[in-house]
Amino acid sequence: MMIIEGVRLKAELTEEQYERAIKLIEKLKSRFPNALVKKFKTQEKISFIDVDLGVRLNFDVIIGNRGKPFIAVEMEGNKSKYAFQIMKFFLDEIDVEYSLDFDGRDVYDALKRKIKAKSLLDYLT
Image 1 (tube, rainbow, N blue to C red):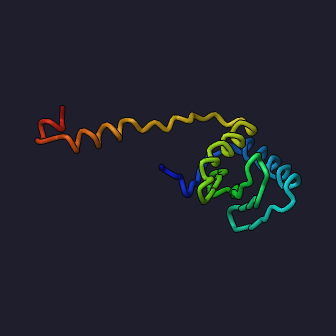
Image 2 (spheres, rainbow, N blue to C red):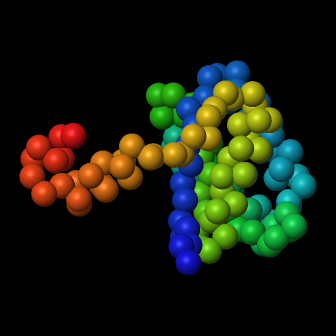
Image 3 (cartoon, rainbow, N blue to C red):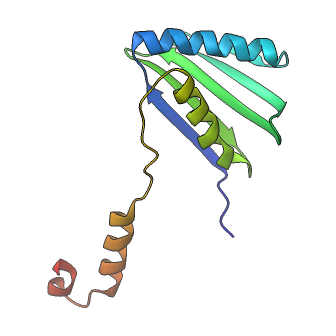
């Protein structure tokens, strides 16, 4: 069985999306009063601890501006698979266009070819 143990997803935003993201995070902080906030020079990290979203979750949302505004979702542990849906929620709510195309099939195929190749000619074909 394969388990995802840690995930960080980041999306760059426009200024308008950044403002919407800040408002959305403020709304979430009011709904989950046990959120912890750490402010840094270029970003703010909001930790949502033991949040009941059908499953009890801990996750961090990082919002900031390092030359370009961004939002990120971080999760650790065996429930990290939920980070994709949390990030999808944020992107949908702040109108960010995205594609959840994580196929990577070309890398898989290249590895298979490399392992099976007996010569350079086999690898190239």
